[in-house]
Image 1 (cartoon, rainbow, N blue to C red):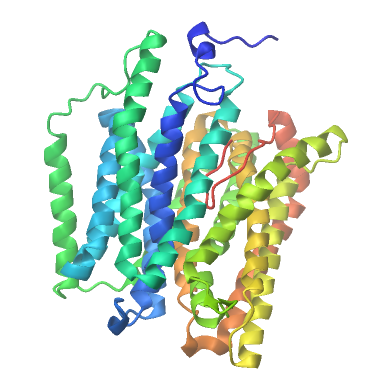
Image 2: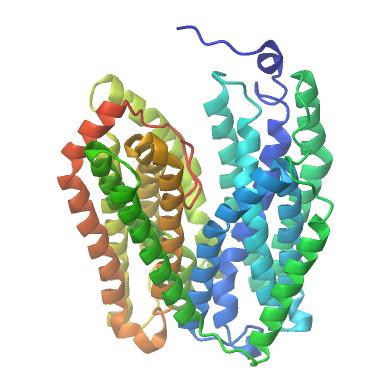
Length: 523
C-alpha cells in the first residue's frame, strides 16, 4: 500500500530533510539535557562532601537517598505534567513554563553558595516540577511536525534523540572540570546556563518555527492552550513556588524533621503497593476476558523486571559515582581525571554503539537470526548482571589492595550496562504496547514509567552503602544487584514462548532506535 503525506508537510525539508522546526527543537532538547545531566551526577558528591570543602556534609546514605527521590520524582512528575499540558496549558506553553521552572531551579541551586542549603533543595523541587512539564511535551511536539504516514517520522525522532545524547555526553565533561578546578557552584551555574540557552532557543526560535509550520499546513497554532482559561496561571505558579519554599524552609530550619532514607523507603513501598493494587483492579474488575488477563499478568512481570534493570542502571550517579570518587585511581599522565567524566561514558557508548545496533538487528533479520523482543529483554538483564559482576571483582580488589583500583573496572561495567540498555530499553515500551489490552494501554504505559521511578528510588537506597564504613560489604552490595538481574532474566527466559505467542498474535515489530541514558526510548 502506498503511503501518502500532505504536500505541505512533505515539502518542508528545512532541517536535514526534515521539517524546519525540528532544528530548534533538537537544540532546545540538547541544552535542556545538558543542564540535567550536567547537574545530576554532582548532587551526591556535593551533598556528601564535607562542609570545609564546600559541600553539605551529609552521610553517603542520606545523599544517595535524596538523589534517588529526586530521580524518582522526575519520572512521576510526568504524569501530572502531561495532564496539565493536555487539559490546561497546551503543549507549547507547558514547555515554556517548564523551562522557566527548570531555569529557576538551577539558579536556586547555584545561589546556595551564598544563601545556604535551603535554596539547594528548593532548586531540586523546581527542576522536578519543570521537567514534569517539559519532558512530557517536547517529544509530542516533534511528533506533531509529521503528518500521519510520513515515512520521515522515525528518522526525525532518531535525530532528536541524538541531541539528548550529545547534551548528556558533553555536560559532565564541562561541569566536572569546572567543579574540580573552580568549585561546586561553577559546575551548578554552568548547568543552569545550559537551561537558559534552552529556554531562549525555544521561545525565540522553536515557537516561531512551529507557528510557521502550522500556518503552512493550514491549522491553528497549538501555542494556544486548550479549553481552560489561563488568566490565573501566574497566580497558581506563584502559590506553588511559595508553598515549596515554605516547606523546604521549615525542614531546613529543623521545625519539621524529615529522614530522606525513610522517605525513599516509604515512596518505594507506596509505589509498589499502588502498582500491585492497580494490577489487581485490571485483572479482576476492569472487564477483561481470560486472554487479556494473561497478557496483563505478563505485563506485571515486565514492569517488575524493568524496575529491577533501572534500579541497577540508575546507580551510575550514585554508587558508581561514589566508587569513582573514593576507590578509583583517576590519575593519567600526571593529571587527575574529574570524577564526573565517568558519567559521560554511557552517552559516549550510546553514540558509538547505537548505529551499530541499528544495523545489526536488520542484518540479522534478513538472515532470520534476529532475536525477538523477549530475548532482547533477557539479554539486557544479563548484560547488566555481568556489568555488576565486574564491580564485584573491582570491590574485592579494593579490599585486597587497600588502595585505589584501575578505572577500567568502571569503564567495562558501564559498557555492559549500556549494551544492556540498547537491548532492553528500545523494546520495553514496544513489548508492553503489544501485550497490553487495547482499553488499558495508556494505563499500563504509565505503570512502565512508574517502574522507572521505582528503579531510581531503589538505586538511591543502594548507592549510599558505597562508603568507607561499609567497605567489607561492598562486593556483596554489587553481587545482590547482579543476582537480582539474573533471577529476573531466568524468569523472563522461561516465559519467552508465552511472549512470542502473544507478540505474534498482536504483530509487534521491534523498533530500531537508540536511547538516552535512562528510560527514554524511541518506539
